[in-house]
Length: 335
Image (tube, rainbow, N blue to C red; front, side):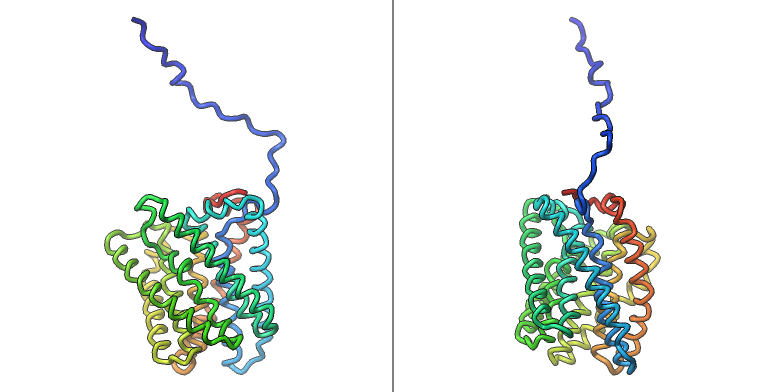
């Protein structure tokens, strides 16, 4: 009996020849969600800068300028991703499958809520519309993520810091609601977000005890600061001063722990995930400035740090958007 011919099995796989001329990718078809976390950080920095200038007795014109730039940048980025999603809606689910996409999409709608806070000082009608659309979009993304998680294997459903963004991120709309005179809405958002944040902190602590996150994902741990800062900020706006102080202290403790572990936390060098450092920093600075008294000077210090760090990280991320480099390293889907 003659042995079977295995020569075909040994042949290398055939790949399609390169296209000539190269295929032209439609505009915004590869918009990476990773652009949104540092943009959210810039929006938060604008709020903190306005509060810092007011606290120091200076004109808030510089803060208003930064607010305008941040809102315009968020609007352009949201338009770019919207164009991508309109071209092929299933791309949203594909982006939700990876952590950079998951955190980026949540930051996109949270950015809409933060932008609404900035807009509320000038036009309450547009601010209300923007807050409503952002909340609705965030809810849709949360439902899509839950449906996706139920279809994934158990290892892919493990808790991670991005859950704060997807399921607690609604709290970003509460300051806008307060600015619009809708304290009841802000109260509902606060008490809905609080147990979810506490649950996620607890599950994350157990997860950390069982297994330390790999170096590339460690910057995401900074996200744990954001819910504490945001809950503290909203508690203060709603008159719950003692609870606000407790959350500010918690956020400060988490931040000090992260700073003490900086070499371990950021050992891989700067990556697109460094966007996770920006909005917690801005949120904690804002919360301290709103609390005032003994928290004023720490808040001013964090704002000063943010004025350097947040634009630097934002620029590092955004300059990799053209040409598809950012989309490639963050596994962003193409429409």
